[in-house]
Image (cartoon, rainbow, N blue to C red; front, side):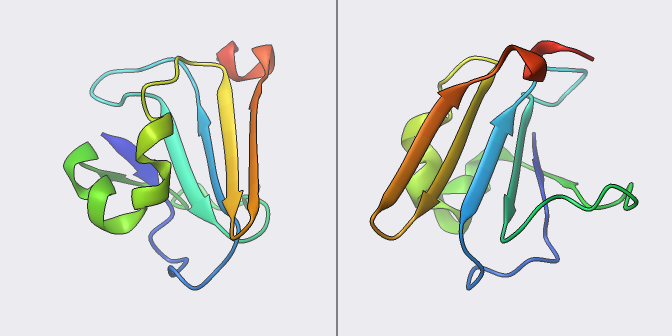
Length: 90
């Protein structure tokens, strides 16, 4: 399962994704579009099966094999992929 911000439509850019360590049935990926994650919205992310990634954010597929600690930002003509140990903290 991937945590996805479903309230933000596909027209918003950039596409953001970070991977924390897996917990329970999640694989640790959190994906959203547009600006920062609201700090006061505990329901911002909803669980989505990985199989739906092909339809929802196909450009991200090549990065989903990255281990915990990685982040990705994608927009037309822009790609940023980085490692941050802070993503490994609970």
